[in-house]
Length: 236
Image (cartoon, rainbow, N blue to C red):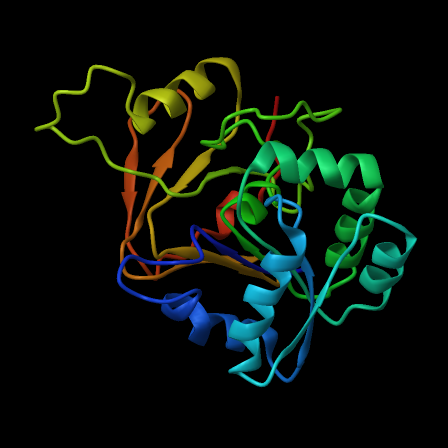
């Protein structure tokens, strides 16, 4: 598989995908057509147009996937697939109900490049249980693509020691997840991504990440770190 899993699609102060476009183009290689899955947002047409305009600047054509047989045909013929950000519950619900979840998984496992951002990165994991999103719809299942055996938390935010907010931090939420679930969780800060290819996992972007494991303290992961061990099957 060839995966590029972005924490976010837009960094503060820059345009859509600007912070990661060099990595995206390297992921895409010589390919110049992408099938884009817009289901995480309500306005599919507007989302496809926005993504298409950005990639057009790079000489890349974007085709929007629809939740019907035409969408299945497009994915079956796609050179690469990009699943965009938005609400993860809505995204996974549409993919389950349309049958396209299985199509995307099959194509990604067959080797076509898969690009995810935010919600699209969430669903590359086994489940959506580590998303930050509100459950605005109820998917038939929390099971996601499972392209990687570990969980991901995009948009990870470190605790602010100066904050007076008394609600749970992101770290506390992920610790709660590990009280009930096995397997590591990678907290991707804004501007970071995971590149997965040929049994290798490498952390990219300037901000680093936070690694959470059951019965262990969270660990800092520097940009450029190889995390190949994350692809080992989870026991238990």
